[in-house]
Image (cartoon, rainbow, N blue to C red; front, side, top):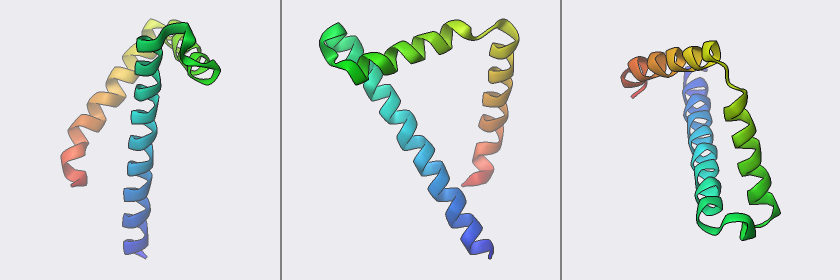
Length: 78
């Protein structure tokens, strides 16, 4: 059972990492090509821009705390 949970955690971590890298690649494509990058790329970039503008100061502090906790715990995952 523990082996299954370890594999599930590893796959989930890899899936999140691939999704994050795909998002960064889409944003980079939008920055390089601009409005001619296509509808999907433009809509993703617009959604990311809306999300960034909607973050308030307490939300930003919360995200910083979560990132710090993950950074401190990450060495234990390996």
